[in-house]
Image (tube, rainbow, N blue to C red; front, side, top):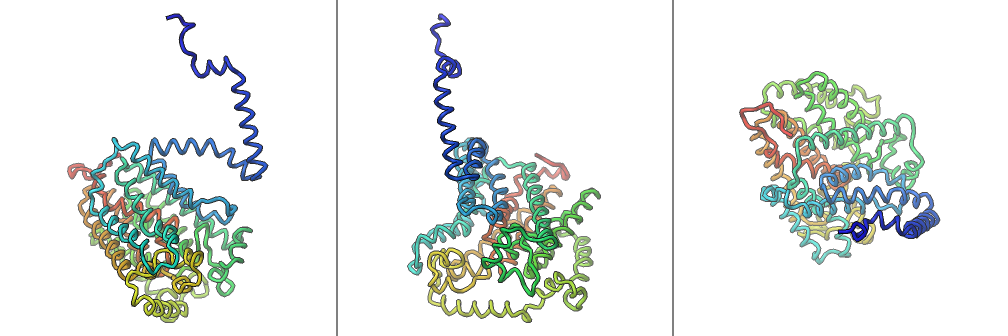
Length: 487
């Protein structure tokens, strides 16, 4: 064939027709000018971020694990919306990342392990998801579209994350990267909390307090640090949870360098919990640490744990040592709830809800309380009672039937986790999974005092962790290579 007869490549066509490049350049310049002129600095950021967004979109569709890690990072960035214009919908972007990860999982279906979805854990999620879908038709709901706002944190996001984590070829290296990212964000959050407590607040944070946050975050003239989380309650609970992780890894570590590193991190994170002034977050440790001792089935660990925890608990419960320090005083009051006026108010509110819900076994409908209720049905009784608790919110919106089903699901997940972890041969993997399950138990307990199980980034971490420890046997090593690692 004569070379002059062959089709021109695209690059050769552009050289033959330079006017096409000129037209595209002019259109790009007009688009850039319109974006900057209409949206200002935000438009400039959109212009710069567009190529990055396209690259990430393709990356997530090609490799869904990229989307999963991106979802984790953006979950932590949600708290920075205080510093961003309201027009930037980070929450919607987070939903979009999860949906894209799910789509990428289906597009790469041939290399996915779909048999993993036969696990009992996934069937527990299906039962709960089905109930929340049926709640859309709850005749008590005053504004049905509000269902879409709360069902994501109730069940939908957990279900989607489960599919992505269960069927993708997640490796032990991926789990380590996830843990490193979690610890890095947590340490950064603690440092941010120290900055708020000891240096000062940024302008956006002061505005947030002035708009209503000061009512719960400045008590007797003392700031409760909230870092870049939704509030001090979630910040303190997260810090306590990651402190627990570091303490377990310290006790179980083989290398003294790693053990010292985890101990230093535990101290930093524990003081992050202290400056939050979140008393209830202490129960993450009070529930999670005994869970670790039980799961480890190691008498030496039980003795060491008792020797460490008993003196600390005794000092908090039976002495007034350290009361001159506000953070220590706040932690101590968590162990004396009957002396706390706010706790008694919560009990009064729950009695009112009991009377309201006695004839509503399926609740008032998903989206009728908390933020969605205040937005869409502010005059409804369910929207006017502070929830203060994740379980109280579930009780209001899904009724005693929904709350019972949810608690049964959590219990089932914990029992499955125990069963799977006790089957493991690999000690390193077992230690990590025990830490994740112990933290899950601690967060589940503290969610009675704070609605953190449905807040980012806690929900993202908890949802991923629950999949990891209930399916952990897929990363186990043969019994003959007890201490081997497999990527």
